[in-house]
Length: 346
Ligand code: TYM
Image 1: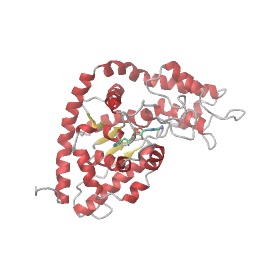
Image 2: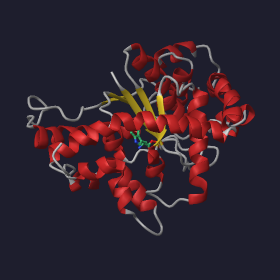
Image 3: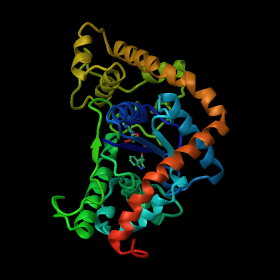
Image 4: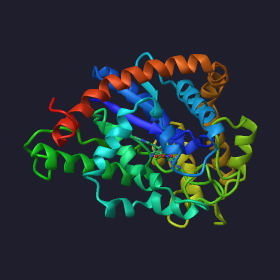
């Protein structure tokens, strides 16, 4: 049971990234090693070049993100942690997979529509091909499980379709994946039950993201505890009187806080609601949520600074990660080339 996930080195990582993905990377690491298989995590610097960016900053943001994954508990001795640009088999596979990717499917991707609308100077072909590169990330390792947040569902569905179409076209499998040779593994998306879609604290109808509406809308993982408290205190709720501490339609702000509190304290949203029956108002919910999040993130914050300082150690870990990653990806890409009739006969 091989686990794979990736994260972009753009901007400051926020609570959505942590509750939706990063903490589940750590559980994925445990699950994969219990099953005697690899957990593989990638900081996707090539994906970061698909929108306007500053080359002088990309490397630093990559170090930031690697240090954060290490601080969160990814252990490069047990998992494979690598930088996407260090593994040239992946962009090669991206090109090969374009042969079985429908242009119409790429055109329908929500993220492409959203991000292409935000670009001022250039909508790059890279932005359009982004989901194929993401499919290649996972398929190059024949991964079984991909822990991600809810916003990646469409991308995961597409990579499944690409794998199925590849096996049908070049491995003689039926369109549903039966029969023939399974050249590529069809991966499964793994989504958390709570925290799969953390919303903006100021605009709770929008997901929390690095480009949040206001600086108060996103809770950054390296925010000081005082700043976190303040952001929760100011979080948008609703004006029901008396206050209703339950999830519900028209209650995006309260539902989001309950979801965050559930995820951060390892309870279900129902359990959290039950624990709030004696609460006096939204202030209690906000204070409990702030407490749980601050406690959850304290050890990550504590470890981060020392790890981030030592860039030589980060590069050394990445060199080992790249080598291990390439050792897995190389024969997979060779199988793909062979099946497609590219290059000399194997
Ligand atoms: P990225 O870098 O935008 O986000 C990293 C992870 O964080 C999750 N996430 C959220 N979860 C809950 N609530 C939110 N508000 C929230 N915002 C982000 C994302 O779902 C993601 O799991 N395309 C990917 C990176 C990628 C990748 C891959 C992932 C590249 N190749 C291969 C898996 C497998 C991305 O942009 O994630």
